[in-house]
Amino acid sequence: MSRVTVIGVGNMGGAILDGLVAKGWPTSDLATVDPAVDSARSGVRHGTIEEMVPGADAVLVAVKPDAIAGLLGQVADHLDPDAVVISVAAGVSVATLESALGTANPVARVMPNTPARVGRGVSIVSPGTHTGDDHLALVRSLLEAVGIVEVLPERLQDAATGVSGSGPAYVFAMVDAMIEAGVQQGLPRPVATRLTVQTFLGASTMLDAGTHPVELREQVSSPGGTTVQGLRALDRHGLRPAIADAVEAARQRSEELGRS
Ligand SMILES: NC(=O)C1=CN([C@@H]2O[C@H](COP(=O)(O)OP(=O)(O)OC[C@H]3O[C@@H](n4cnc5c(N)ncnc54)[C@H](O)[C@@H]3O)[C@@H](O)[C@H]2O)C=CC1
Ligand SMILES: O=C(O)[C@@H]1CCC=N1
Image 1: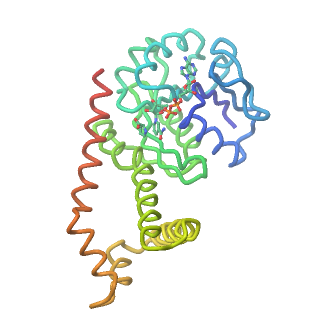
Image 2: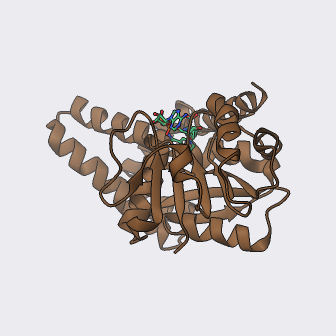
């Protein structure tokens, strides 16, 4: 297996790291750097940039977007010449990554999401100017261990961030709202939680089997029945425009982060 160093073991870096460990990536090939974290995951080496970057085949950087350029300046001095640098920072362009490094190392701009932790992530990958097929294959193998990978032109990264990068939060917000709606209608909260979570899980699994969402929605909607009334209420309150606005707002924020 390739040797991977994760710099920044917070929500996203930690999710990818834990996802890799869960999928059996050898812990002896993993290393971490994060001054806020006392010790590495069991079996994973943990230390400083100077200690953990040399010898890595891939360095995955998962710090906040405003910290990435400064960090890459420090990383550059310790990288092996062929090591791939993977950034998951929202909005930060390939051009910014390459200029912050100031080396000819291959880079990849990636937008992952937190379900990587359970092996069901989505990663949007845009390769850099020095990134060859072998480097891209390494990035793919790393991210495919924790979910699916889409290689897309960089101009689509901000839109994809609005859908899949931020998307899990929209789903969690909907689940939370549905649980509370159940409680408002008299269900005990633990019951409302079980009913809602299993409904999302069951519906997701049906989608995963490949049936189109419109067909699945129609299967639930008996003519003159309960569901069509529920869906009508969702239309009245603007579910579709609300989701379109959420995706657009996140896309715009990703663009802004790239400019700052
Ligand atoms: N949270 C999410 O769902 C997603 C986050 N991202 C991106 O991932 C990046 C990290 O976001 P989160 O994990 O949410 O933030 P976080 O705040 O949970 O984690 C950032 C980690 O970086 C560490 N860190 C800060 N400076 C460091 C340094 N100089 N060296 C080593 N470690 C350092 C912090 O101690 C912290 O543990 C951001 O750029 C964000 O845009 C991308 C996709 C999804
Ligand atoms: O909220 C954020 O900025 C990060 C990027 C996508 C998901 N979380």
